[in-house]
Figure 1 (cartoon, rainbow, N blue to C red):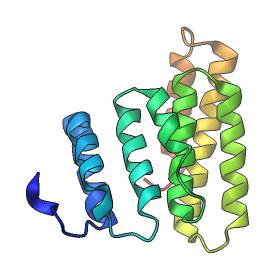
Figure 2: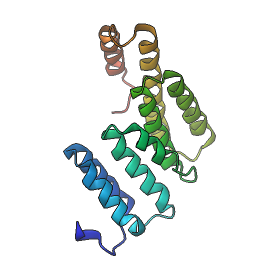
Figure 3: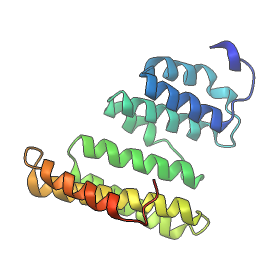
Length: 168
């Protein structure tokens, strides 16, 4: 806990801390860590990084109200943070069965990706693949409902895994 006191914390370290907390389900500890160390974040837009990391923790904690609160504060200035926030937003709305909102967020994220040519090809492709798969999944849920969807999901998974152009 005291490792980063008064020391700058780089984005990669915050990501490692966040991902480790998610895997170990130590959400509350990580949220407290972020709160106590947000001033030590060594990014230009430290508030946005803080909001993104905390939102991600709340998402995996399944506190979607808090996730929405923090996601809404992520700045558009850093396109990686913004697109990450949009992807989390899509996942929140999907979990809440707000499929129309998911489709709106997917469309917003796709337009953002198209308008920011400085985003690298590999990142753009990975984000686009995720958004496409999520869109297909939303359409399956809209069509079949949650109870009758297992077969359709299995078919979608087989199609995804058989596509040689996917990035994993």
